[in-house]
Structures are given as structure tokens and as C-alpha cells.
Length: 269
Image 1 (cartoon, rainbow, N blue to C red):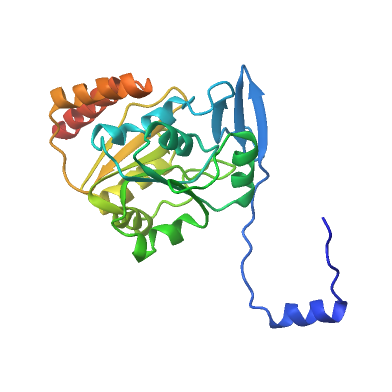
Image 2 (cartoon, rainbow, N blue to C red):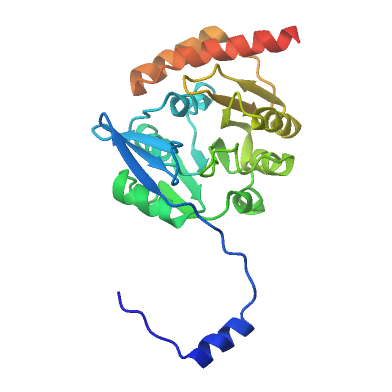
């Protein structure tokens, strides 16, 4: 790469005239591999995503599989978005297994996007796939995008994994604005982390109904948020779960059981 040198005088002039902007600080993007699975990290031992190298479009982690639970309610989703790209697992799965669906992924860190393209088989943008380098808060507050999504998947963690980096009522109201009235949001949370209850309360302030699936083995808890109250026909949901299992191999029947359990526990409170 050739870098054009600037004079000291010109550089100083530009520095004085340019508006001061806050430059985001990004943790280093690092990789590891174990037993045929490639993992994404942000310079720590925390896993930000994993891909089985021989099955790049499969969802290797259980919580990521649960993030697809919106499929039970949206068998013909036209537009799905992810906030936080991770190793692009959800983006690739939706793109590969939902051929009728447009997929938009939002990621602030350009290095994550580059690594996903180089090391995690992320396809290039096309008429069905758009990966945007931008802040998730800016995305949800863009009024031109409101009511444009059927499903939204939120997985926003920093290098230290100290809870989602966006967790305010304002943020989740923006998420709700993105969805159509039938829309569903799924969010990755840590069940035993102090951030859990804060996020649940913020979601409850922004959505009509919030349910949580049973914890995944690593402690992740996936929340489902609805813009209108659901009254599930569980026989129909089990039929849809069987269809999902046949088409994608995802354990969708467990999601139905988890939703039923969550509704029964909510009824007792």
C-alpha cells in the first residue's frame, strides 16, 4: 500500500479546522480453533461466535439456535435483521435457510466485517444480503427503517461481555419501531448476570409481551419480545416446529416447550 505523505503545515491546518469527533475504540479481533470449530474473540477468552469449519452455515452454539425461535411465529418472514454481526452465524443461517428473506446485519467494527468475510464464509452483499457498518442505535432510530422488519435479532456484547452494550428503554423502543405489528425480536442475554433484569425490564417497557427460553448450557438466555400479546395454539406451533426441524435440523420443538413453560410461569405471577 502506498501512503501519500502530507506536509506538516497542511496536516496542522486540517487538524485545526476539522470538527472534533469521538473515535470508537475497538478491541482486537482474534480467533481460536478447537475440535473443528473456529471461534471469534475480541482479545479475551469470551467467545463472540463459533463456526464448524465443515458446516459454515450451521448454527454451532445452542443459544444461536434459540435466536431463530421467531420462525415459529413468522414462517414467511420477508426481512430479518441482526444487530451485532459476531462471526456472522445468524446472518449466514438466515441467508442460506430462508431463501425468501432479505437479511440485513448491522456491525460497528469494520474489522469484524472483514474477518467474517475472510475467515467465517460471510457472502458478499447482494440483492438479499446487506451488511452495514454502522452503530446499532443509529440504525434503530432511523425513522425511514421503522416498520420494515418482520424479525430482529439482537446480540450486542463487547470484549468483556459485561452485558449488552445497548440496554436502555430508548434502545428497545427503537427496536420495536423497526418491527411491523406482527414482528418478533430475539435477544441474547446472560441469565446469571446483573444486566439480565435490567434488559428484561427495558424490553417490557417497549414491548407488549416478553418471554424467555430456558438457559442454554453456557448460561445464555434468549428473550423473545412481541409487539402484540400472543395466545399460542400449541398444536399448531408443534406442527410448525416439526416443519422447521425437517427443513433446517434446528431443535424447534424445545422452543415450543420453553414458550409454554414461560407462559405458565407468567400466569402464576
